[in-house]
Structure formats: structure tokens, C-alpha cells
Amino acid sequence: MAMGRTHLSHPDQLPLELSVDGLEREIEARVAARCEAESVRWKFRLVAIETVMMGALVAAAGIALDQPGMMVARAAVLVAASCFASGLLLLGLSAWSARLLTRFKRWRAS
Image 1 (tube, rainbow, N blue to C red):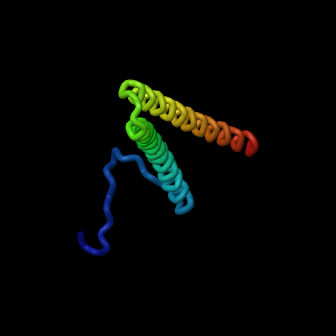
Image 2: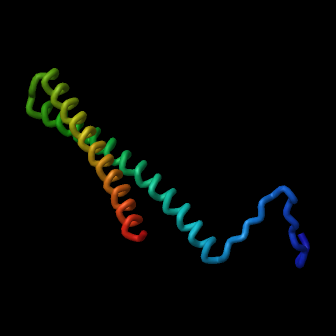
Image 3: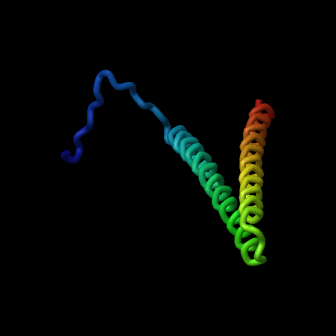
């Protein structure tokens, strides 16, 4: 493409008329939405890792203390399930409170 040539848009294409401020706001909104979605994924990964680690720690402690195998397995699964449930509960509560805070800010602004 030569310098000075302008690109003509297709006649069916809708014109995009954004000021610099409007464009920046649009980009910031999209980046914020993407970061929020990625943060939820990362939080879920952390809950999953924590679940596995807690279950493994309980199993290792039971084996180190020479406890019966079924009791160690049951305790490890119970601790892992409890850890997973509490992690998911915390994720849900944090998402719910974030939405509530956003609605409250919009309500106060109007």
C-alpha cells in the first residue's frame, strides 16, 4: 500500500465513529471484562490446586502415622471435598458481592 492512499470502506460496512476518548473507554471496558473472566479462571485453578494439596497432605499424614488405609482415604476425600466446597462457596460469594457493589455504584451514580 502506497503512502498517502486512503482505504475506502465497503459500502455495506457500518461507519465506526469513535472519538479518542470513546475508543479508550471501549478498549478499557473490553480489557476489564476479559481480565475479570480470566481472574475467575485463575481463582478456580487455585481452589483446585488447594483441594488436591489438602487431600494429599491428609493422606500423607495418615500414612506417616500408620493409620488404616480406608480411614486415611476417607479422611483425605472428606477434607478435599470440604476444601473444594468452601472454595467454590467463596468464589460464588465474591462474584455475588462484586455484582452487588457494581449495582450499588450505578444506583448511587444515577
